[in-house]
Length: 147
Image (tube, rainbow, N blue to C red):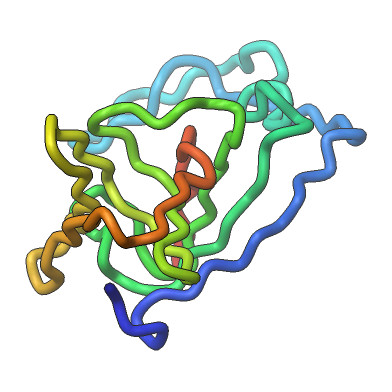
């Protein structure tokens, strides 16, 4: 299990009562060589509508730690977690293991469950029969934060 100093999750209930449409630039943005800018906007986008499909069972979790860096989830990022989705092999989930929360990729094998970090400096966690494991929710989206 990870040391609490490595990972700390903050749970936040999203406010889905609001609607804030944002303008979306048409076309795409080149990450390589620049291309001519488009002179139009696509239809507005409401992030609540685009990212939250089950408002009553959706939470936002702020991550502190680096155990999931290999999956693009880093310190300060926001995860949109849906508690109504049943965990499946390969999903990234918020797990409650022996009284502590962690975010890991779930590996379901015939005889055991593994919680896999994506940073090689942390070992996989093999869930033993005497461990208390609750898959609290499945991560549906990650919002990257830059500082």
